[in-house]
Image 1 (cartoon, rainbow, N blue to C red):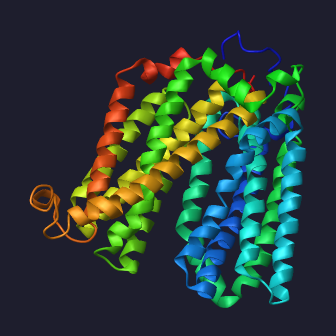
Image 2: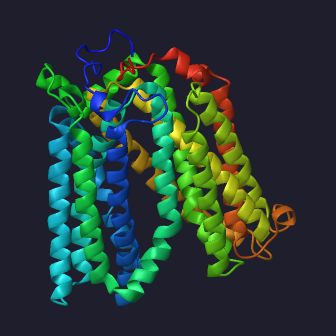
Image 3: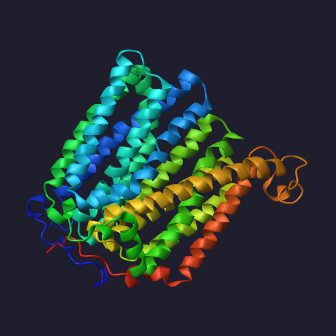
Length: 458
């Protein structure tokens, strides 16, 4: 980071010897504790999310209730993220995560108690998801900021690749595991598994945090209270590093388009194929995402992260456009594989870039504000895109529709072809955004913005 950034950040005093951080091959014991702990916790969370969704739909048969419970798990975090980041940065991150974990465990116990009494209702899940969303707004910035405090910059790319592997494996196997467990032990059994996984994961994360010094834990800094807000810190950072502001706009646009496509892929495929065939497409896509993360994790000296992001996003955009044009099952599987391979690689590079360029003691606040912007953008784009596809594109590409004789002669007509047009537009816009970024100095971001001081391997 530039020298004009507020002084006081120095992670070079972290004692990593006992964690074997000097190992040029591995990532060190502290990171592995953190990674394993978070992975174990996410296993329980993924099982719980799937099981609760199934339970809600089985109890009510209402898509609206199902959607409402999902929204309740996302929207509340938007209101507290700006404040959560400041708390994460000012206080010991271990205590923030411990407090979040204890609170979540209490909520899960409350859910188990309601199940035991056979008195669980959908309104209880609304409350559970709202509170879990608020807790997650504090926990996730603390976790993300801790990764960069544990590793030298040369290893952040591999670390993000490993975290991507965990995420993609969960997306592949969690629904299958949860479905089998729901049949075997029901929702009470999955709640018990989630509670056990959460406690075990928290213990592993705490073990990793013993290696952090005061800076890495989120020590207090000598700043006036007026300079401590998430909004002021974030705006000050982006004023001083305008290239990173360009990256933020790029991420907002790409994430919005990708989220819209990810949401609409299910109805587009189901318009012509069965649920089983949809599962095959999504599984093959998850395998692609997994291999993208594995590929990134094996790149030990990958330095031009921005170039990697742009190259992967070109592949992603082309895959989305081809999927929109075609109605072939084989093409859908192929496009899903390459799209998620590119997405997994690009996402890992992006996470590493942010960790390299933002001072660790401000990451909680900046990541929180970025989370607000990204969630707001993706939610808005998905809502608007869904309305446009359902109200305009789909009718226009039915037999006799306004576009049936023009666009329809190219991509076909009938149910799902309006969503195909939406895919083509999203892919094209993604390609334009990527090409525009490559044509500017944004492609040289790795060189323009200096890396912050991270734990060294010396």
